Length: 481
Image (spheres, rainbow, N blue to C red):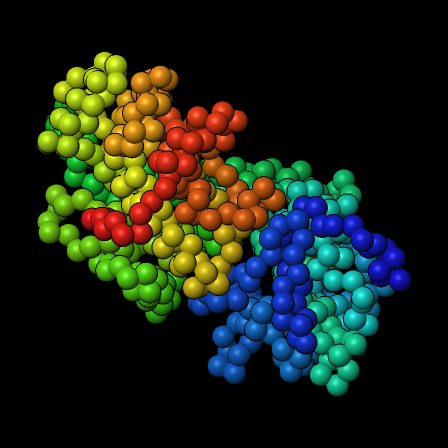
């Protein structure tokens, strides 16, 4: 029995989805399983054996029982494989098939379709979740775990039987090894990779990591943070400002898409419309600026090229960059803050740079919340992204708050400031099982302030009291984003 093979093991390391027609809720394993982006994103270049009436490829989430007869016109091949039944022999082959698709260009496995005449041969619906069954097979036999979706489509005439359809994505970091062997597609079957193919697979993974690292740098222009072009004969540019604006950058690279999949203009417009809707729903205005390969969505229209606002850069594959300027104190505010810090016993001078902790937190978290709302609006799971953050012009910048608790804390323990030179964080892959509950808002707020010296995660009561005081925000506050 299938349920005996799987038992009650929890899923430990795969990102799969199981959805039955009569029970539309999503099952969850080790990775939090949400609707995939493919269920909502339009126009992505992909192979699908299923088509709409006008010939457009269907995603797995869009496939119905009535679409199965379309398979009668197709033969098994590089990206498509059929299995008549789900028996012990097929179960043994599934990890090999999934790994071979991931090592190649992705593909579809349909169980319950005869591979000779393509007739529908319904298989019994198991008591266990098919998503967990396949996930457990991969956990035991495939390393690393490739990304795939699994959906059991019930027979309308008999909901106790149906067809299992799986879509395996092209892997980002091959090779994927099944039972100690690197499997690749060879026509309509799978087979061990030759040495040249192994070199190619490792090269592909290296290239992919390079693409992600290359993406993780700010590309939106900020006049007080960027440099003039280098004068002729000079190796470096000239700083535009002696007091450059501190910036927090959040980079979210969408792993499930590839750069070659250039979106249609209609798709880009749809993405921008969704972003506008999020701003509107949150009571925020926005201004969209066209760029070469992206759209820049600012929290307000710019008065000129020297104006500074938070900005979201949205790319065609729905990768995202967020840049938020910190709120620097200046003028009389800076003078008063420096006086109070001196009164607390700190050695500060007039050149000291302070950022307002609460106002900056509101700004960072408000803009990051827009990203959370956007992916929810688009039906995208954060687990499809890689994330990194970067601090610019932050070295030595001090946190400031007029809270008596803060002033007492720094008087006893010293100033809180960014103690490192500007740098980018390591890249985190949100499908690694450690980020099931990822939210851009929490990630951005916590990492920004920890980098500025705020003692997050401490077991000290005074540290925690300070964190609670500084990370509290007032909903009545209004800020220029």
